[in-house]
Structures are given as structure tokens and as C-alpha cells.
Image (cartoon, rainbow, N blue to C red; front, side, top):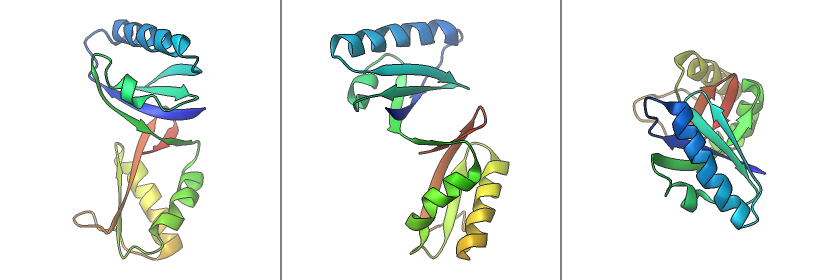
Length: 138
């Protein structure tokens, strides 16, 4: 199953919103024979599905965006995955919700490829969310 990161406007009672979100999405998946697993993840929602249903997910109240992602348990695996896409870049930036994670990943990329980081005007960007000890490549 493919993971998708859901960006939602969380109300004051996130558990109530999550219950409503789950009910609506799981009903849709059951009606359409789609495998679906929903996991809360530190202010975001991860959805694993057997088909791309982002077009349906973004119609759920409060959902701002739905993006396919890749999930890594360590920064080395993430860097190994992104290196081929950065080989022709003259500079790069790592955009992350945690500064120390951006610096760690950026340092590993610079050390491996020798290209400089440029936070103002990079040729290429790597977008990462760090949540619950998971590295999520956007």
C-alpha cells in the first residue's frame, strides 16, 4: 500500500476530527473495495491505500492537501534515495519542519555529492517532514 500524508486544519479537539475523518474515509474505501489504513502522526494524518484516492480525501472537511510520500526510519536511507535526483544540481536546500534534521540531511548530501547548500535560491529542493521519529519525503 502507498502512503499519503494528509495536511488538515486540526480543530481544538483533534481526536474528534480524526474520528470523523476516519469514519468518512473508511466508509468510502469500504464502498469502493479499496484497502485503507489511517494513522495519526504528530499533527498530521498518514493514510495507506491500495489506490490513489487523494482526489477524494481533499473533499473531506478540513483537509488542506494530500501528498504521496515515502517513509524512512533513518536519514541515511532517505539521503540514499534522493542522491540520484540531485546529481545534476549546482546547489540544493533541505526544507524540513525540524532545523536539526534539515542540517543533518543537508550535511550528508553535501559530504556525498560535494555540492553546496543554498537556502536562498537553490537549484533543487528536498522536502522532508520529521514526525514521530520517521523521515517523510514529500
